[in-house]
Image (cartoon, rainbow, N blue to C red; front, side, top):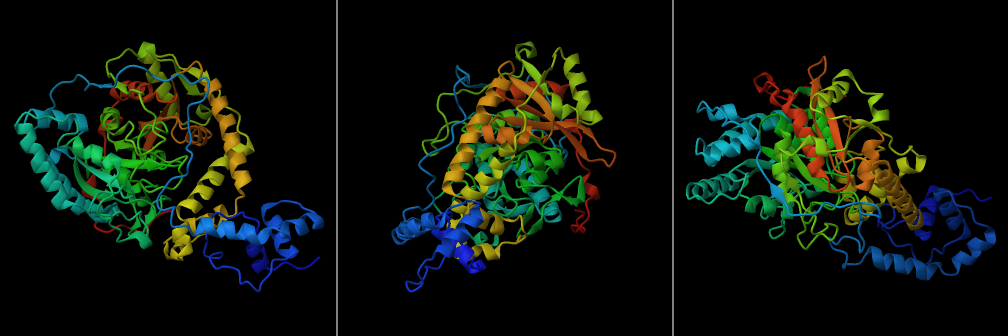
Length: 571
């Protein structure tokens, strides 16, 4: 058998149409004088683990020239732009019951918060607390905004969590909010509240860097994310674009490694690294993050924030960087459960741009609704690996009159574990095909074996047929999850527990993290509440009841002890 060179393997892979990406190693057109050979096809077969006979390869060669031209026409087409595929993932399958009624949001009943008059004391206050102080005119949006801007300037460089500080924008929006509130025009609970955006959401006239050097100076004057527009219309005050792992991986970006305010020798995890770090450090009232496969859950757990990853199809991704069209989700990162409900109430719902967002599905937030109406479970296998603080959550829930019953999630199959990687790598390779073709992948900070440059090249080698097979298996998982949760509205599991995090990111189910304890090293310990599709109300209500029965959400890191410069990282 002829020895196959690396060049032949790469060329063969392209010939076999296993690439949808004009990657750096595949961007050049094969010279006309270089005819394809059976060896090229044999190399492609070996690369993707397929077997063909010599006669079959000879037959395949007869149509390769035209096939290659078709592939090139698609890869180099100017028609693609920033368009998503002509299909979208639908989390709703047979057997799924959707909420009905009209959307409704209420603030929880509570005493008027005490306020000494020192605005600095409000750095870690909840959105609900700040709202009451703003409405009663005990504090102004300008005062809050100046306080948070000062903290962003003071602590942002120490945590490496701020990409762009938007002082002029923030002051202008805060002054407008105060003027409206004084005139009796109240836009809702986010009116006048300073916040930050993960830096993959476009805002008109501001940089949107994706945390990556090739996009460091990217400004699209007319493009804006629906989430940013809705928050502005709700009266929220945008103070900063916050760091993210480059192209939504980890906590490493071109500015360094975003730090955990509880222990700055640790990274904040990612990819919503800056959003979780800034919220936990009291640098903004709330933040927006995104998740494809753990990017809200992981940094919220690491930094002790309360993060809500909504149902896939709840929040429009229009104007957001796309990594995986069938898995990307947008949600709030806050300091309390109620805050997540208040932010979510503003950003959810269709916008006419993102076809994956379903219409006429209400979100009803009634913080005083009866817990007895909820059917609660707990991830039986997950709690076998839980620590003492996490197990104590079930005890607290029982004191609240809730009786969690064991939930048996579908048995992990190797194919289920393979689907996230195949999906994200293939869709990411397509989403960043232009970056790869231009050689821009070489400019990324992270160049390891598991970093985007290499995984996008891997994704370009996934046969289209196998990608579709993975999505068929994904549908089987959807069916099994519907069956497993037929008798439940919400289940509890240790934060980030496997296989729940894998399953729910594939099926699109909502989840929320909040704190339940502190480790011996003083680091946060979190618990997770996961619901049936579009049951954000259920997970929020149960988590809110738990939160109010404990005090973990009132404890935050001592920022006065933060070193002036980020110390060496402990990995």
